[in-house]
Length: 106
Image 1: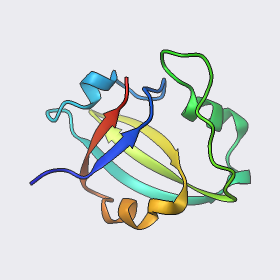
Image 2: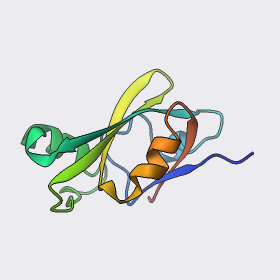
Image 3: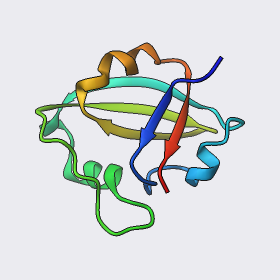
């Protein structure tokens, strides 16, 4: 049975391991929670941290949506997050408590 996949447009500093390591099927990542939040509830520091590229300067630009999702992920004992638009909320919620694959473009 193949894992559902969460894709990232780049490798981010928040990721606890390199893209190559985090994509290793022997290092499962579990989706612990999906939180729907008003954008104004997220501090600029959190957004900065969550969207910072690992190998390039700058940050990923989040959509201007009034509400966003914060996904809580656990990889080898390391808790990390990703901020997402609400478009795929049903999909993410269907994966809570399950291991998911991670793909990060290098």
